[in-house]
Image 1 (cartoon, chains in turn orange, yellow):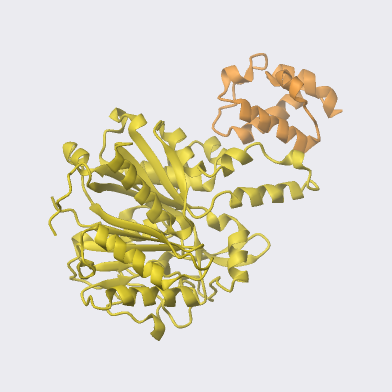
Image 2 (image 1 turned 120 degrees about the vertical axis):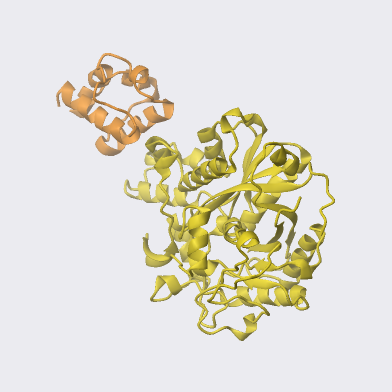
Length: 81
Length: 416
């Protein structure tokens, strides 16, 4: 799976858990929390959806890796293989 | 009767926000009650199939963002809708209100069953792996949830909690608010009751196991208190939240005053978990009337609790005959025949539907009575057709619940 595809998956999850957000102009290199109204519970939702939909575990120590779309892609791409 | 109490101790209703299966505003709801229009429908419940239920169709997105609806509870959405409606109808300058002086007191029959059942179903899809259990479960299921969701949505920083009082909860929420206003703990109270119970199979299954779940080929006839063929409860969702204020404050701001809460009582049967005790119910009604400074023959209308269970209706009617047997002017009606049993919201919704009778002099009937059970005969029971031209100045609102909790609230037309 390419990094772009990983980003699309993350955006799709965010669209489900934060349905009021406009995701049309999300910048890949900017922290998600700096451009969207996301709180810690929302990030737990992202972790849960990765677990449910793809069987991917994100340990608590790695939550910081989900900060931006770029860091999500870097961190998650190997886990999708 | 002349009101002698100090105006800082007199508590008045200045608005009602509600959602019922047959109306999302007091006007719509009242119009449907007077037109004898019920709204109960068949819904599909997990594991049980189709059951009759009262479903509300208010728009939660009117006052909440989609994420808040997704992360919150149905009871929270009901409460938020009702709270906004009450505030807007009260005419208060909400932006100028000191939110630390607002209390939210919401009656609930139960809370958390819906969310717990949903999560158990959710993890059943993952071989019961509890790692799939949502982190939203705790904030959704804490007992203060619907009241807490209201405070977050509206920025209210005063006290909030729910009052767990089975199906007496609607009255109990209002009584709590009256007490807190009289104590000076808050200046405004948003209070009443809510229910989301139709979203879990458990309550339906338990009533069915108890032999107390209504059934009928026409869902709109399923809830039929006092009818000989009644066979149980139609479970409903809904809510009614009132804006309550001290009379002195309401007058100061020129608020519309819909009614005054004159008296109340909550007591306990102390006898059985499910079978009501008419002796204690009668005692509850008498004490509420006494606290209101009235005599029973000054009560113009009793809004009965009757849920259409075979025994519950008989027991309440026995209590009503005991209290009002010598009060020829007192009328009786029931609202569950239109909307089913809205559980924690029932008492608050049923009172709301009757409040306009202070002005229009009309008592809506209980409907669906094809053949009156002789054990439920009451003098002046309004059946199937509205009673017009009645001078209504005092209403007694009954609301009883499991574990033998009884509540009675006396509300009067406002007289300065």
